[in-house]
Image 1 (spheres, rainbow, N blue to C red):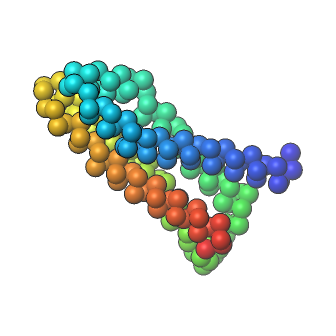
Image 2 (cartoon, helix red, strand yellow):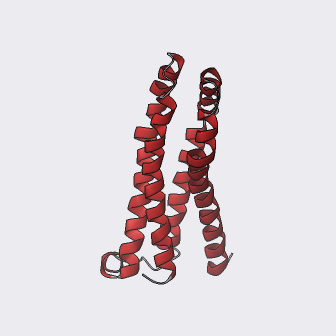
Length: 161
């Protein structure tokens, strides 16, 4: 496989997984979350627990990790970020580094904040706290802010910035 073909494949998978990761968070925040909150409390709890038992957080962590890894490969081994001077001395390099930090931040936030919050939320739902499901929304909004940062960086990098 020649270098151009490899770049195309890596970029294709990177973008596909990025769409899955970002799109899944958009869907959870704006479609699934409001739909779940419109259900009776016992149905909310059953659906919430079912989603968490199906390893959804693990799927998103794997997809996010692969997205980040392919972004690193695409930017360094197959891209222009070959030296520390380029990374820190060009608009593209700085934007690429910011995108990487956003991606790692989203992954860390999801792993250390959003996912661990799911069990206490489920316990509160089981105890009859009907507002507890809404507590996940601000956590997802933080992730979305990170995704909008990454997305902005991707657009800027397309134009060499």
